[in-house]
Length: 337
Image (tube, rainbow, N blue to C red; front, side, top):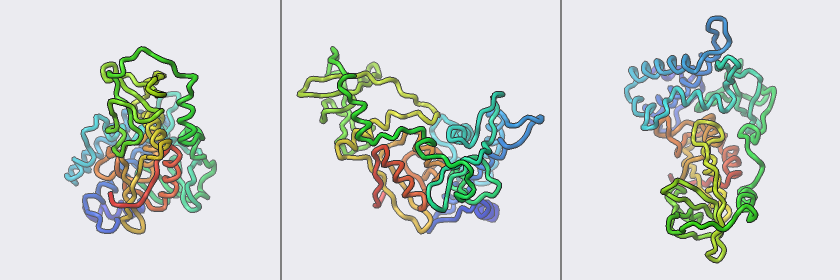
């Protein structure tokens, strides 16, 4: 079994990092292998049709996961978690939303072979699909050389992101012409505190601390953008945000990051170097799906397949990831996790 894992790791160019535990390395290799199996299965032909159904891929991946767990029982608690999302469906979703897979008119999944790719430095790029010459696997991502990319994709286009800075984004969201006085009992509300040193999910208080903030009414699960001017409260109701597997889901988190950045208290991401190849990147909150999925193409979840707070990331991707996170108001710094 050790020989098998070593050969799989060599095939995907996934080295151990310094003092990495065996269980951790097994997880990283198997996690990446499941991604490669997903793309390989989608590239196959069934009944002379290009592409396969999501159900077919799920069955195949679930059988593989069961076999891997049978060989390596330690994986049971790492590949599965309390999340209701099955790993096989999660992997498919990440690939479909990031362009590795496309959905045909016949509702089949196909591997994208357009030569698209995201170049993130002079030596490496994320290839969308399965390149003819595989260079390196990182998390669920296929890394290759920029020379292999026929159609470079801009980061903003890949993420479907606007070009607004966190401050500009806040000023757009808090345009006073969109706000009005409303008969709302302030005592029924909790307010997001951008000045808090806690994680965003733990930064809600009974009174506002800043001019611009977000309020929530627990009873009705209603959220408002709020302008507080000398205790006169102006409200603009927030549209219910997508909370699913799509690339644009969980976008409301950007509002919190932008507010914290506006008040010079940005959300922090800590990085601790493991060796020359890898670091651990840890967050004080969860990311919107756009940045989360991008990380899964450059890193491995640290503790289990659904860990959204800590990632084992390749060092060469840190400058690129840092600039992407900075665009939504998150800063990276080195330090202990």
